[in-house]
Image (tube, rainbow, N blue to C red):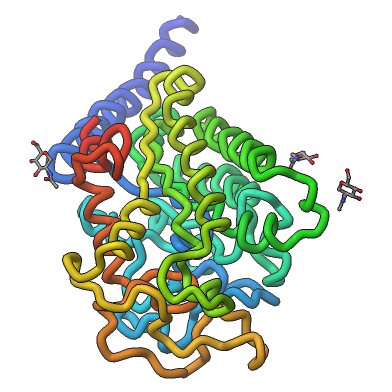
Length: 373
Ligand SMILES: *[C@@H]1O[C@H](CO)[C@@H](O)[C@H](O)[C@H]1NC(C)=O
Ligand SMILES: *[C@@H]1O[C@H](CO)[C@@H](O)[C@H](O)[C@H]1NC(C)=O
Ligand SMILES: *[C@@H]1O[C@H](CO)[C@@H](O)[C@H](O)[C@H]1NC(C)=O
């Protein structure tokens, strides 16, 4: 008798569970068929991919929540460090995903996170002490902790699936490293005796550790963004008299870092079985535009489009002056401020990242191919 009661109770419990598993998995399959196979994006990195996280930080100087930033963005200034959309927004467009919300925005909660979250923070780097110059920023370590400790439990609850089932359907984008050179390595006296090679090996070892952390949590699709040709930015060109050409020391550092990133892609095949990692060479894409601007629709490759706050004015030579002027023809400028590309350049990067067939631009496959795996 007793066992019959238990059995029927078990049955009563099991039926709804089975029904749910069946219906939920049908639902998941149906949504996959209808649209993108990538369900969302988790984004980590610096200002090139930050979409407003620093807006909500106290004592952060690296903010872009004022005009002329966002002058061409549908919702105006948002904290994005460019005139319009950044590379992440444009990749979302390509993948037919809604724009990814910023982690620190208090309204980013509940169902708002189901298509991913952006953790990136302007002025941050791979090393925890990169960005201290700019006050409060969120380091890569902290960004990954925010994903693991805050978002992941909510995502599992909202979707009703475990992380191992969910995360392979999301794209993890990492765009960081430039600030570790511009605002750390090249500024620190104590680095005088540390070789660029040793510093770069350290950086990529730490980055690799973070990727493995994301992999251990269930991430399977990764896109690594190159460090851009920082030696060609108006910020550094303003201090030199090289009207043509770029500061090779900084570019050499970026180039070295990118070579390490690319080999990380190869190494990941063994270190992270079942994962797919791609390298998006935005360095080459921007370098190509600077070398041959006219054929790609650009005219100005070395001056900022907006009025930049110089060192003399209490600025840093990077950010636009609050409510300052912006150039009229933003589509022919490579740089919007002292460091960050215009939306026109971001469009080229995102388009190539999505569907270029050149392994010199996306290696070993493009985002479109990655999304279909
Ligand atoms: C760098 O190395 C030289 C010689 O090995 C030493 O004299 C100097 O103090 C070192 N500089 C720093 C900043 O560590
Ligand atoms: C590499 O990182 C370790 C620990 O994080 C640090 O102690 C060491 O000085 C770093 N080496 C270089 C060359 O930056
Ligand atoms: C890359 O190759 C695919 C398949 O051959 C093609 O459909 C696509 O248009 C190509 N992409 C570009 C940018 O040429």
